[in-house]
Amino acid sequence: MGKGGGKKGDGKGGKGGKKGGKGGKKGGKGGKKGGKGGLAAVVVTPHLRFEGFYLSKKGNEQTLMSLNMVPGVSVYGEKRISAGPTEGEGPDAEKKEYRVWSPLRSKLATGIVAGVKSCWVKPGAKVLYLGAASGTSVSHVSDVVGPTGWVYAVEFSPRSGRDLVEMTKRRPNVVPIVEDARYPLRYRMLVPMVDCIFMDVAQPDQSRILALNAQYFLKNGGHFMISIKANCIDSTLAAGVIYDEEVRKMKEANLKPKELVTLEPFERDHAMVVGEYRPVPKKKKEE
Image (cartoon, rainbow, N blue to C red; front, side, top):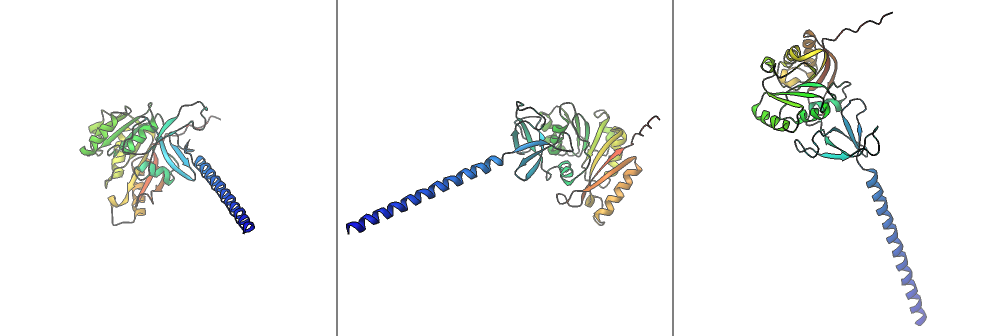
C-alpha cells in the first residue's frame, strides 16, 4: 500500500503541473487580445479628393469627419475624436479634434459618400447655404471653410432659425439668415458674391430657386451643389424622369450641370447635381 500511495501522489502532482501549463496558455491569449486592441486605434487622414474633409479609420471601417472649429463642443450630440498628427504633419504636431459627419444627417455628407467627383465647399470659400435647418450640416461646412471662409445660412422656419442662430454664437464664420430662399432680394444686403451655392430646399420649384439666388449672388464661374428630392416635385413620375427635367431647367438658366449622383441607399428618390454657373471662357493659348 505504501508503494501504491507513493505512485498516486506522484500522479496527482503531475496533473497539477499540466493545469499550470494551461494557465500559461490563457495568459498568452490575453496578450493576443491586447495586440488587437492596439491595431484598432483610430487614425484620421485627410480625404484624398476633397480638401478640408477627413476620414477616420478603425480597422476596415471609414467615417467621414470634419476638423472641429470649436474644440470641446458638439453641435447636435455628434461623436468627437481626438487624434494625433495627420499625413504631412510633423510628429510634434498637437492633437486635433474631429467631428463625426454622418451621411444620414447631412445631404452634403451623403453626396461625398455616394461618390460625387467634385465638391466646391472648401477651405477659404464663401458658401451660400439654402435650407440650413437648425444648422447640423452648416456646422460642418463651417469647419471645412475654416476661419478664412464664410457660410451664409438661409432658413425659412423660425423655429429651426432659432437653433441656427444659437449655433452661430460659437462660430463667427457663419451668418444666420432667417428668410425665405424664394425671395433673395430680402437678404441681398447680407450676402456678397459667393464661390458656391449649396441647396437643400424641398420645394417643387427647386431649380427656379437655385437659379434666382445664383443670379444675385453666385459669381461667374462659381459652382453649385443641389440636392433634388423627386417626390417633392412630382410623386407621380419616376425619379429619373424628374432628374432629367430639373437638369434641363438648370441649363436654361445658365447653370451648367456637370454630374448627377443618386443618394441611395441613404436617401430614397434623391440625387445631387453639381455644376458651374456661367462658365468663364478659357483663354486660348498664344501660339
